[in-house]
Length: 457
Image 1: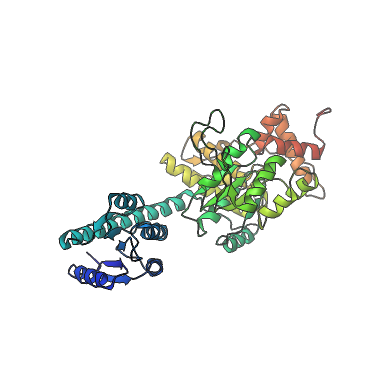
Image 2: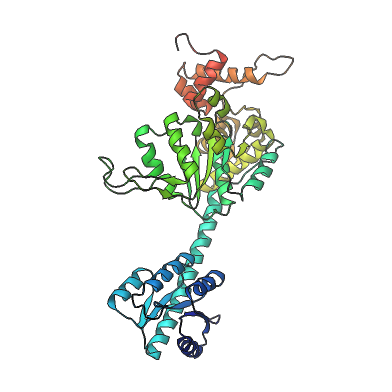
């Protein structure tokens, strides 16, 4: 073995400890001794051993093994990968089966056979080291996959620099975060970065559209259900909170949740417990919650559509993502990144013509970063060569709007973009929303604000 093996020997009899220590020394295994359950737990917490030899009976005259079984359970909670060999003078079949079921790797009776005991110890040391190495490789692969799956946070512009500095500060915390911004600004990308840069980064990241559940499935999707809870519940099912346990739960579109669902979510955030549909016992959940919305929740609270107490619960820290029209300095960098990814998938080294880049800078990007990404991906599919031209972008023709003292007011600019989209969609609100990269409900609110709704709507 590359490194000397280390064993922890746990027994309340000094002669047993001395005998085992001398026996293990023959195989160059260093042995530490623990004489009480508390001593065992202290050793396991502060040091990683290759094997634990554990006596099931610490109290003289007690033959049930319950004390040792309880200790075995607690050791497994601290170090699930530690090989445990149970040694006891009370070697009943029941104790052996119980110990193995609780996670012990082997069971040896006192008085033991030295040859058998040493063979068992050395086998478990080798097996345990192999399993630890495999586990560490899996964790490293998971870390690599996580880094590859999370797109980079691109933001050299003055609008994004404060956001990036804030994210760096809050990522290591356990605080609940509310990410706000228009559709397509990259709220889920930011949530994934917060998760990856946190102490929970190697644990699950679960994303759900919190505003997309009907009342009939909301509790089942978020809190789970037990078999027989309703007609189609043919087996137990974990909800999003349970799946995200010890990790991060991302609640997107939280501003679209109905009030009744908001109350149920608030209770879970307050108690950190979930009750599955059809169950009666609450189960604790350990999750960091990150929420996101494209609506102004303060306005929704005043309108009675969002609970004020839930808003206070989810916006411990707020991150506002600026729209792409405020990030002109990032457009070329973002386009280059999306083009590189598309080139890797197509195995073609695509470039973009300077005129096409200039057109990207002139476009108002109502759909934000998501629209830019789709524009680049579409251009790669339509391009006749490895150079992306302006025509390949398929962006709508520019119109020269009326200006006020040479500058188009933001309010009027949004109104003009909506009118253009409605014209292209022949008045169809749903199709216009798709063109703009926003939801139908979001477009409807903007139509109301600009007085563009037809009479009777």
